[in-house]
Length: 256
Image (cartoon, rainbow, N blue to C red; front, side, top):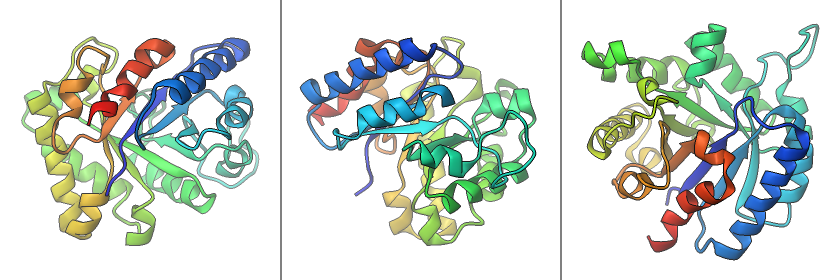
């Protein structure tokens, strides 16, 4: 059975003390309020990773992730962080392919394939993001864009390695805009992603692949989104910066 996951992406927010304080609140709320085996992941700036990973250790369904790694193992890459360095903090996951990395830092599918390899080589599980822009959706290119991003970013992996990947569909036009794909729009793309995975690997692998929705998911719309057949949770931006909002999203799975 595939896993239900709610992952928070703090992006470039929170100083050290505020981040540790927020994570501590989240951990305590998960212990007190979450029923079931859904996993909660917080992907923080690098400055928080070691401290919050320590806080997560006693709680089996809480994990920590980074927001990026460099594709090289080490070297003269001032300002970057390697997969080995992230793993040494106690983190288990890393977000790769987020639309902001693609748009603002020019990350290509070919580069992201290298980063996926670097993550897996260091025992990190990639949360691999895919999704279309507003122009691509209006131009009827959604499925072509999604298929290409999968093929170039992760389909070079063996079945064994691909099974360690979490996919996140993020319609770029719905990130930070307040717009959200309708549950039907999101489900349509999630179903296509699962079908594409099945066609490349096997139906069994596709059925066991966790696919998250990312795009202005909040406590008001999470239940309707997560009730869709192929949506296994969310990659949460702004709402993950408020402990109560984030936990209300996580708790959607309490009743499922």
